[in-house]
Image (cartoon, rainbow, N blue to C red; front, side):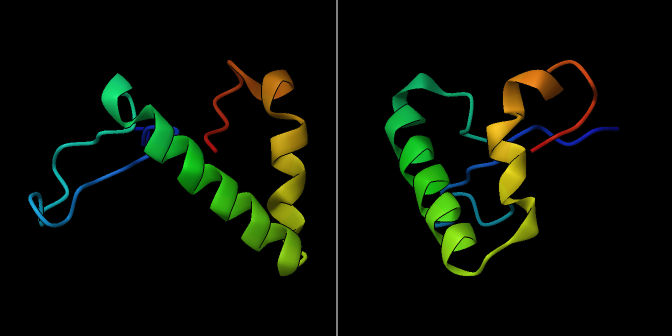
Length: 66
């Protein structure tokens, strides 16, 4: 089984992390904020996986999960 592309949980109310909020439109802004923080961290740490963001659209449908 493949994991979803993104996972977002409210651990205050869902400590078992069973309700993925990443696809819930009411959490879209939070997800985008967290993705921006992750990209910033990757820039600061020179993470080699940072390149995946630039090629995201070309990877759609390939089975590569970000």
